[in-house]
Image (cartoon, rainbow, N blue to C red):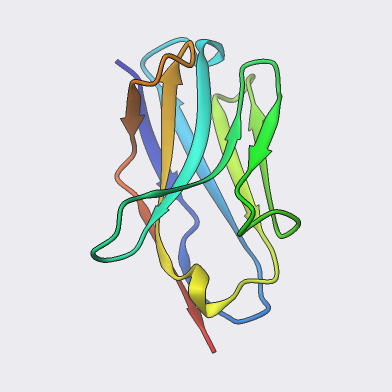
Length: 117
């Protein structure tokens, strides 16, 4: 079973940047499609960005052009560079791992991002 630990959240002013990281362990990282979600109170998690084992990437329209997902298969990490942050980006951000892209997600514990106006 893969374990995921996110880091890098915090408080930032609108227009600022943050870089989230997710460290994976316990399984073969290159077998997993990795993604970042975020969740606000009372809502379902939203998929923000997804990167496959061969590096194909998709973004949600809400973050396209502002957020960049990347993975380092040598270090078993996936990152989310977030630029031009807006107050509506305030949420708990989660890293997920999907073995072979079959749709069964493993989740990290989340890291909180707060964007002040």
